[in-house]
Image (cartoon, rainbow, N blue to C red; front, side, top):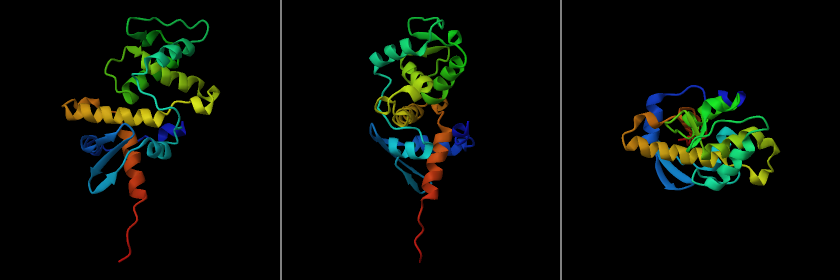
Length: 186
């Protein structure tokens, strides 16, 4: 619970300004200049400010792993309803139906909330069984968050202002830079 408290509180205007000024440099590095601050989001920075583990870089296009994760996620007796695109969210067992919704809305920023898609299952598997996963096989959630933030920024620049859902992450990235500023003595 303490982890999620880190993400509370934000300034919507600053979050939008951050997203609109974000420039992707590579798949693992971006830069933002906002109100005189330069921030270089990387998976390592996101790891440091969130304490989320670094692991295997993973993209939602890695569909093979997603299907394996979907089979692993559900325990005996848990039989969710599948459709052609994924699993109906309301048919997933509690609390994974709600976790799936939060994942769709705030992490992957997928606009269709009723279906949990294949690529969500890799993240859900990590959340449900992460402690059992050997460290070298764990998902790099900071990498995924950076990709999601970059994708949201691109969509916002294309005119979809409803796309941004990373307000708390943006706030703690900015706070980290401000806390680490060193003012020269004059």
